[in-house]
Image (cartoon, rainbow, N blue to C red; front, side, top):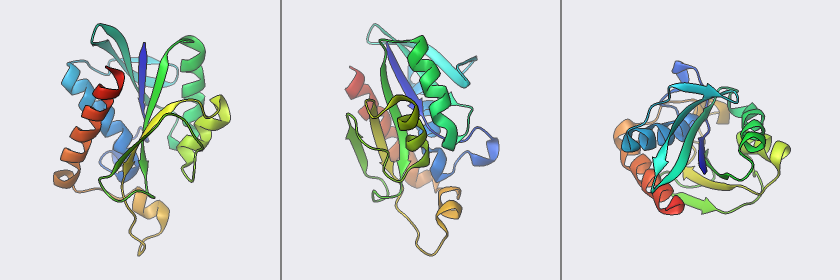
Length: 167
């Protein structure tokens, strides 16, 4: 089983913000696979389906970004042998760059810090570069809206990257 977790904040006001790029990516993947976020499990909205004959669970934690580990540890306990791939925004990558890591530290990202605190560093992640506007406070920047025309093709590339990784 593959569990793909997009990090973000659950309230509508956060949709379309840089910090919710993870949610946007799993939403786009769900759309591609023809599945819906119609269930809740482990403090998350989930979409269940299959991809290449294997069960897939798409996850949007309801715990807010900084407490993402609460959801992820529950998923890890429930689905012990599942492969976990987290999709997350990254201010340290130039806007539009995508970086895959098999495991590693949380760096400066609070959502990843929470997950690492609960389950350790042994999970895959895809980081989506959002760049940084140094004229804005960090929190103001990550919670600001991105240009959908700019990010639609980036999100599509992330979806393709996910599909390649779990094939």
